[in-house]
Image 1 (cartoon, helix red, strand yellow):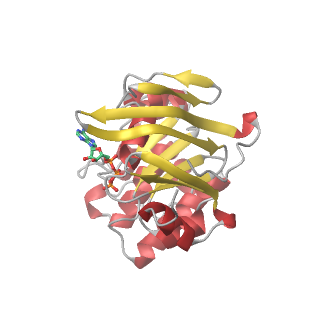
Image 2 (spheres, protein in one colour):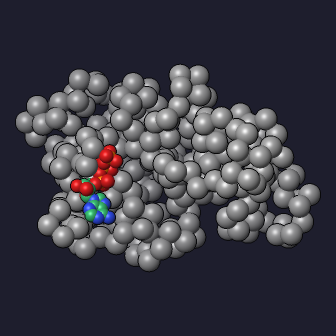
Length: 257
Ligand SMILES: Nc1ncnc2c1ncn2[C@@H]1O[C@H](COP(=O)(O)OP(=O)(O)OP(=O)(O)O)[C@@H](O)[C@H]1O
């Protein structure tokens, strides 16, 4: 593997995959993948369709279990059996389908996941007012662009929905927020707003793992970038020390790694 990244101090590493492999029948979705992710940074994961990005993220978020290798998160080896295990450990994922309930309000969606209620402290689940107040706090902490926490999700634009999903994933205490193509379906202005939100998440102390096919976004937002090709990790770079051309060459194999 071509990896120009220094591993960083041990305490700086939030997540480390070590030689992770996973096959679906004859499809080798992940082959010996080792990547690291530092605390308080935006780490991008890039690669062509089918390169293995989502599968790797699903191993981290408890949807798949690697067949070999190990994953270390926040200092301890993890062996998640479900997304709830990952959530319990502080890993939240914003999936492409967002999993919002259209007919519920913003605040109800924010509290759909009862874990968040727990993390927010002693807010009784059935106390609507307390939950609305908490929801407003969540939204204002990240300056999320939604009209009001009492708006129904079905009235929101794509960017606003994405913001609600990110806000829900961030909670107040998640250590790692994983985002799978958060702006894939958005227009220019909504993309810009969601990008601002991602940067704000980092500024608030969250670590972010961003899957994106949008190069300019990756180069502008990320602190480091890992490149996957055909199930393998073919390189990692500090974003400030590389170029879009080099990343494209790694993705396509033109870099010869
Ligand atoms: N549940 C599954 N069952 C069988 N094959 C799968 C499954 N999930 C992924 N694969 C295969 O594993 C490989 C990696 O897929 P993955 O979704 O991780 O790629 P990706 O890099 O996220 O692609 P994209 O950018 O298109 O989302 C692909 O060949 C895919 O068809």
